[in-house]
Length: 311
Image 1 (cartoon, rainbow, N blue to C red):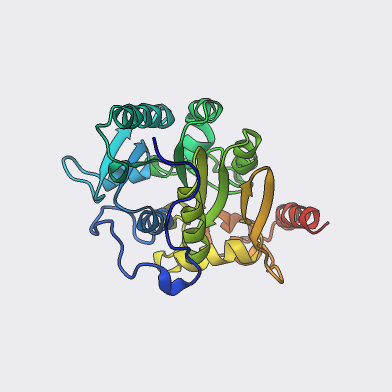
Image 2: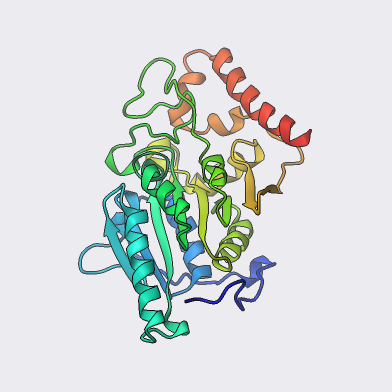
């Protein structure tokens, strides 16, 4: 079994400590500007090569084309709803080998579930809840591009209000609201929960390192701007992430021991339309006429969140 408590990783405090080159191989067939891929690249650099990815069906299963993967270590493909169950089998097998003296401590692997929001917020949520109840020692990374990106970007439990998707093409876009997966995980009282994104690389690296040093269920929920599904230029992917944080749409926070802490609070929040107006999926809120009602509602929900935090 792995030792309790923290490991010997040197604390990441500055950007210059981040690797200059990714350990994941290049040349994968992902969309240009994929925010999810960039977040996973950064996370993998911190996790290191002794990692096994249990990859639920989704965009990132395109990374591996049989018989090759871009990962230095192991990779396991599962059905969309089954990744946490697959992680349980892998973790149990590693622990059995260790107990029998057939696996040295330095050969042990970090078991990482890798899913999109379709699995994390919906199809795989039941299996994930079961893994949390069993206190499975695993890291769960969700690249949240707010829709079923691998099949044409239909709406998911992560799709924000008023966004147009392949299955919400009405005059006002998606009528529902984004599910609060952070709070759903926190309600299970796991070891760690955090939001992140590639546009804030130091914040992301610190959170992945903290998660790596803990034992039990851990979540990194990474907003993943998607040029294909959100309809913006690939070169603007990082700027889209920064705007999500600066407008307060994507709060950067973490949960540890029952306490939620915000790791970055915008000093002066930008209007949400600065973020929405850069994405084709929200174009109907601005053209041919400005939809003041919907824009005001979206802004009010963001303001209410931060007002509650400030109180």
